[in-house]
Image 1 (tube, rainbow, N blue to C red):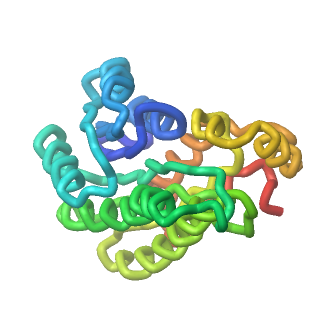
Image 2: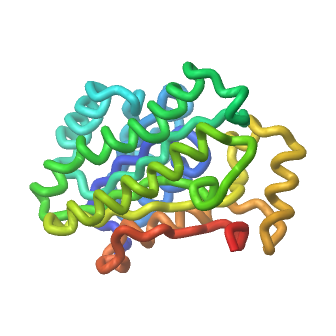
Length: 244
């Protein structure tokens, strides 16, 4: 038996990287998985490779109508929603003075506003099945100051605050809400940073290496599973010691 047998999960940003790894692991552990992303070809390919337990839905997380469509598709296909991983995110390695309002708004709408919309969208379906687990992907950039990721860091600090507020509000519905804070993980998003910046980040972690998407997926599995039934409002940091 898998840790998630009988449950249904929505994973955003699941066409590649951490979201893909989470979707694959969750399906292996018995869940039905709805993968969403703006990368349609890649997302369809991942869902097809996972098999009958998975479905892909093209999805812009900053769209309220898009969230309503994803929830409707999930319920129509699998009958319930138990888990949400708000994983989709974008980043631009820019300092405050170089961050134009349009860039800031684009990052905010995906990384922060999309998380808000996602939590609201799954609230009623989770209440209907007696509870659930929401996992919001933040970052170690939301734990300390950064001089090169102004907008990204701002949204990740906000995600942590939203997570704690939602955890307090939704506990009465048996809906747990936790934040997952990866360090420097070997994913395509690293390519948006200058190499020197990535190397400096790696050296700042006591373990002196990149994390893997499998390590993040394993942490997400714990938070989603009944093993974490008394865990809510927490920051789960998976960063090789970077934030120490």
